[in-house]
Image (cartoon, rainbow, N blue to C red; front, side, top):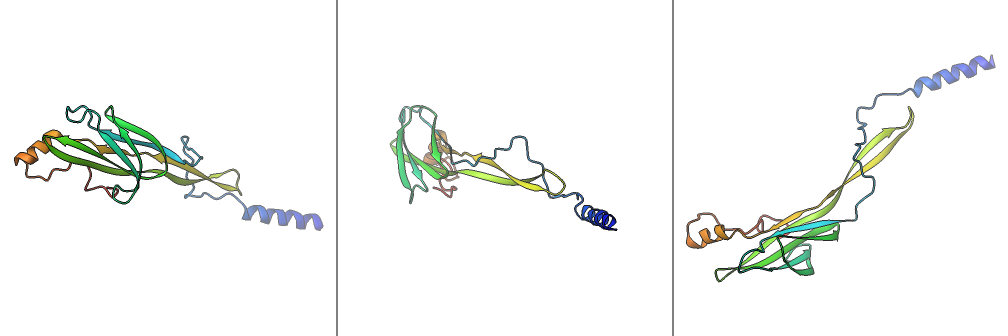
Length: 172
């Protein structure tokens, strides 16, 4: 009688712990990086080939240009500058000279660690979570469009001249 009770109890336990299909369980992508990022690369695009601006000074801020902290001033010698920096929001400003005018090009963005959670089933009764991390690295556009500025100054353009995303950027 004791053996029959143990067999029946085991059968009941197996029926309650049988595998169920979990539609919310996504497979972990093969490109999954399980290590959280602490830093990334900030890229700044600029105009440095102009005769009036052969080596413009680029000011890099943690936070916004208006209320952030100046972390570095770089004399540019090419079309891009890259810096490895901790996660966070950054902005840059470049002062260009053009035809006797001073133009400020401002843009901003954030280096971010974005994560998604996935689950994996190692057996019928065990489910474990895996967090995959993706690094978001911005390119700030601080280029100068001299032709567009000339059109604006001469009155040939009905649009307001914006050197970059200066006024549309939440970090400017």
